[in-house]
Each structure stands twice: as structure tokens, then as C-alpha cells.
Image (cartoon, rainbow, N blue to C red):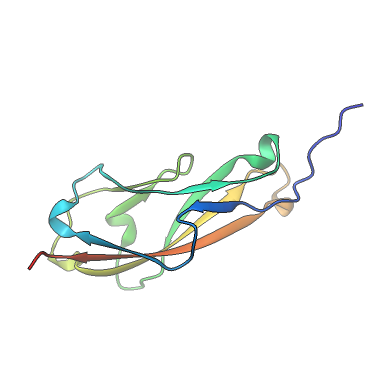
Amino acid sequence: MQVEDVNDNSPLFMYPNKNYTTTEIWAFNITPSETVMQICAIDLDSGQNSEITYKLRSLNNNKNVNSLFELSEKTGELKATRYPTGDDLGSFELEISAQDNSPQAKNRKSAYIWIRFNITEPL
């Protein structure tokens, strides 16, 4: 008899491991395709229930986060998509979700983390 895993665990963020992580970024240090942060979550279930999909959402209504950052759904790698401009200076607040891939959509579990990037110019 083979017992299948029950999707009883939610993803858990390993890095960053706390909400409201603030990261300072100097605008001139960001280049397109550069990894800004590596997001990492795990799920203690097994098989398909342990596979993680990452999603990015802006918490800033007035800034287009997706024009500056992209998040790999599979690897959690957060990259810059272009050089920042003067309009990008200030804070970007991001919500990143990690969702397991349970075959039954109603059984999928998610975890969320919030990150703030302060993009500044050197003095």
C-alpha cells in the first residue's frame, strides 16, 4: 500500500525570514538582469505538494514595480529589469507570495512576505 502526501504544510520563507525586511539599494549599483535578492521558501510536504511557485505584487499604487523588478516563479530570483531613473528613487514595497503546487487548487497553501527597497543616490 502506498500512502500519498496530504498537503498539510504551508510554505515557509527561509530568506528573507522576517516580514518588512528593508534593503537599501544605491541606484547606480543596479544593472539590468542583476539579481537584487534571492527569495527562498520551503514546503515540508512531499512531491508536487512541496513545489513552490513565487509571485510578485506591488504594494505601491503609484509605482510600477513590474517595470523595475521581475521575479522568477520557479527559482525566487528577484532581478532588476532596467536601469533605475530619477522617478524610481524612494521606496518600493513588494509583496512576495510562495504557493505550493497541490493538484487540487482548493488545497493550495500560500505564505507571504513584505520587502521594502529604498533606492537612493549616493551623497
